[in-house]
Length: 342
Image (cartoon, rainbow, N blue to C red; front, side, top):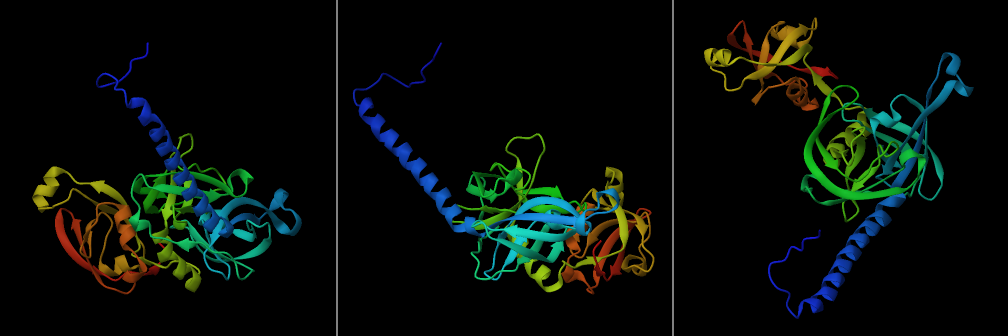
């Protein structure tokens, strides 16, 4: 039985409104199609298909001691060949070959690799290339149209479209470090899309496609381009992203309500230090196992991920105040982070 959801009797002028509604729907679909086609026309020529070879050993050793390492995507962002992709696409590669949308093939050199953000920069041995424009991921809103371009499962120059499903997600890099601020989208991604651009309706790159949840439908993730803007110059300059180092191993802990009351704490979380590296900045500052870190500088520390996020390259050599609990007593230490990657 079909129930019609109406709010009153039909009026004589209703049939006249139908053609207008149809025309309006067609206009909307045409505008949507034009936006997607226009974005692909602008960015598509800059998207590359990457074939990676990695070192082999033992029975798997082939000619030149290399074996296929998989495929992925990337996009050129400067006319002289600098190209952005995912770290997990090229990490450990002995050779990378890039195929452009026009079918031309180029050798690529790894410029820099940052597993912590899952981003890498390579450079094609070519000039005067079409390049993609980097946008501003900070302006994205849930529901906004986005387009993914890449080479899933070997199908080159594949286009999918969807919306920004959510912002501010977090995923873990293969190194175990948390990548924050991730864009969630329902634009379909598959293996091989990794490293390709996620673009807005104006053809500006707003993210780098990186991951999907296995078995899920329409839950895909991209690293925001504003993160890439921070990482790119450091990879080009140094080949890596330098981070500061304390020299502690710890775990996130929840404090009891009683402990919070006795110690007059505003937060019930912290980082329990389980190990202090010899001769590290933490040891030199007097930090010990079983200390609970509550604050670093002016920022509360509620988890290991909070502490990781604070240990940026700007902190290297800069003395910071650390507030911690030791045997139930609040203490303040001064620590000077050193250059490192942990």
